[in-house]
Structures are given as C-alpha cells and as structure tokens.
Image (cartoon, rainbow, N blue to C red; front, side, top):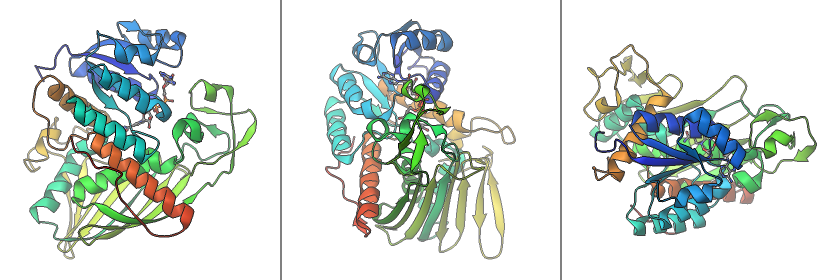
Length: 385
Ligand SMILES: NC(=O)c1ccc[n+]([C@@H]2O[C@H](COP(=O)([O-])OP(=O)(O)OC[C@H]3O[C@@H](n4cnc5c(N)ncnc54)[C@H](O)[C@@H]3O)[C@@H](O)[C@H]2O)c1
C-alpha cells in the first residue's frame, strides 16, 4: 500500500460508480488529479463534489494527460474501448468498468492491446473481494466441497421495474445490445467461474424484454437515472435473461438475471452444490457463508479468526463489524495501484482478460436467445495478461 501512495489518477465518468472509484482511490492514498464528465460544466461540478484537483474538458483529454498515471474509465459502455485504447497508447495503467466492450471481438482486440502494452489493465469484478466469496473458493479448491455438480443462482434488481424508469443503459447505442446480462449477468458469471474454478462451455438462454416501451426523458440524455416523463419509445435490450449452462468440469447450472424483480435491490446469489456440501453466497448478506451438509447446516462468519488464509486478507475488520461493497472496491483499487507502482500482481486480480471472458459469454447468451439453441462459448482470441 505504501508504494502506491501519491499515485496520480484521473476518473472519466463521475456518476454512481465514478464516485465509488474516487472514494477508494483516496483511501489508497492516490492523488485525484482530475475528472471528466459528459460536458466541461458537469466535470467542474463533479470536480468540486469529489474534491479533484481539476476538471478536464473531455475524457479524451484526461486519458492522455501527462499528469495522470492510472486512468479510471467509469463512463457509459459505448466509449469504454476508445478511451481504454487511447489511455494505453498514452502509456497509462487502466481500470475500465464492465462491460469492457459492446462485443467480444472489440474486447479481444482491446485485451491484446493491453497485453502488449505491459500496463496493468483491470476490470472491477469486485464481488471477488468479499472475504466469504474467497472462503467459498478456498473450500472448493481444497476439496472440502467435493466435485461440483450444480452451480446456480440469480442476480436480481428492481430499479428498471416500471415503464417510467429510464437510464442510458436502456439504449442499445450507449449500453450495448445486451442490457441486464451484460450489466449484471457478467458479474454473476465472473463470480461463479472465479469461485468454482469451472468455465462455462455451453449456454442455452432466453431473454425477455418485459417492458417493450419506456419513456425517455431529457435527463436521460444528460446521463442521469430518472423517472422519465417524455416520449414513449421501443426498447430493444433485455430486462431479464435466463441461462442454462454446462461447464468444462462436468457441472451443470442455471442463472436468472433481472432488472425488474420488485424488492430486490442488488441480490447476487450464488450456490454451489458439491458431492460433500453445498455453499451459498449472498452479496446482500456477505457477512456469512452458508454451508450445508445432509446432517447439518452452518454459517461461516466473516471473522478473521475463523477464515482460511486465502480469505483472511479481505476481512479487514473484526467479526461483527460489517463489511460490504465499498470494502470490496477498496481492496480491488488497492491491488491495482500496488501492481501499477511496481508491486506484485495479486492472484485473482480481475483483468481485461476477464472482461473479454464476460463479453464472450454475453455474445453467446445473445446468440442462444436469438437462435433458440445451445451455443458453445468460444472466445475470439483468448489473451492472458
Ligand atoms: N463494477 C461495478 O460494480 C459497477 C457498478 C455500477 C456501474 N458500473 C459500470 O460503470 C459504468 C458507469 O455506470 P454508472 O452507474 O456510474 O452510470 P452513471 O449514469 O451513474 O454515470 C455515468 C457518468 O458518465 C458520464 N459521461 C457520459 N458521457 C461521457 C463522456 N463522453 N465522457 C466522460 N464522461 C461521460 C456522465 O456524466 C456520468 O457522470 C458503466 O459501464 C457500468 O456498467 C460498474
């Protein structure tokens, strides 16, 4: 952590997640040199709110600035690739939000560019940083859980439940052809593969656009999530994805991804059924990991004293003092800065290769849903960095 103190960072995109990045960056001792937003004026407002040293007129100017060592790309999805390419070309380390790209081909090309650059190129699949998710991973890897037979779960939200709920993600041009799956299904698959050690090899998917019309508002154009009162327009991106899959190590599974499930705010649930025990991780209640055997069920608490060596580093507070999403981001950003300033690249740091993996799965899910058949998950060109 000490090495990375004073690392100079810039954040492009200052909405929900840009502010989360800024907080974690500050905690890691970085200098927030500047921010860029959708206009020079909104960048100035954001710079004041986030206490950045300056506002850049554009994201393009920020990613090339000689004053910045690490670029955080927190913009709408459609400009992730050009901004990340420009940042890498300018010699920057890059944290780019998911989805890395709007399709697997452009994610593969960007990942290859990142690998050739020798820079750190990371994607915030931050649910990996819950100590109880690491504990589940360790139980599977150590053999305690036994060979996995079934991997299942869901990622449910309700913020797009109603026709007047609006956001740039709804628009294919800004968010990409997949909405719910690319936005949150990507997180579920990343965590499922990370914890299980399995790779999804085939998918059979169905997508549903529960609300075929939504109301666009002017605030939507200004990149704010709002209740739109404007004109009704057709929606082409999915609200729901249901995916059945097989893995390379003989497990089968399902996941249900939804942004229209009332009362569910951010409920990522992952269950792994092995020959000896089952494990359940719930992102909204990450203080314990449920472990079931036929005779007993138990909860492993996120207590440094009872966790394995693999999970303990992510339990930064004593048991009974809850940690959550923000702590995951802090751990992720800390690992990126350490690697970017000459420290080790931590095992499990999610990189552009993982972003490419998510884009590949998204393409397969869309193809399966469109063609109503099983589709093999094949990466355009796997590149590991
Ligand atoms: N890793 C995670 O857990 C996580 C969580 C939420 C969002 N995200 C990702 O972060 C990204 C942003 O999502 P959000 O929820 O913060 O969206 P948001 O709508 O809250 O914020 C988007 C921001 O981008 C800015 N912006 C728009 N066009 C821009 C441009 N041309 N140049 C610079 N800035 C521009 C807007 O002004 C706004 O500040 C998305 O890709 C999303 O998938 C990731």
